[in-house]
Image: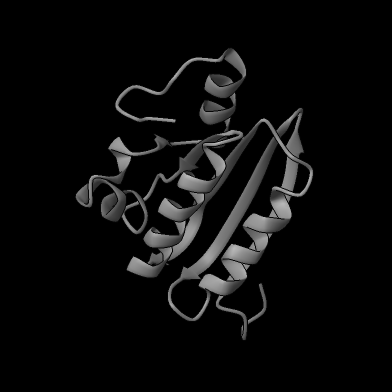
Length: 126
C-alpha cells in the first residue's frame, strides 16, 4: 500500500481456500476495490473464502455491508470466514451482531484450521 492508497489487498491460496488479506481503510471510497478483490479471490472457485482484516485500520458501515453481501453470495457455494483481531475490526463486527452471521476468528491460522477440519466456529454461522 502506497501513501496514496487507502486500501491494500493480496490473495493467497491455502489448498482449496482463498485468503484475502486486506489492509488500510475499508470505507465508502474503498469498498469498490475491496469488492473487486473479493471477486478476484473467488475466480478459482475455492471451497472457502477467508477475509483477513488483521491490518485494517478502519472498518466503516460500507465495509460491514460488503462483508454481509459477500457472506450471502459465497455461502451458496463455499464457506466464509472473517479474521478480525483488533478493535478497529472486531468491535464493529461484534457490536452489529455480525459475529453471529458469519464465522469470526482471531487469526488466519485459526480460521484455516477450523475450515480444514470441517468444523464450525463457536458463535458463528457459515
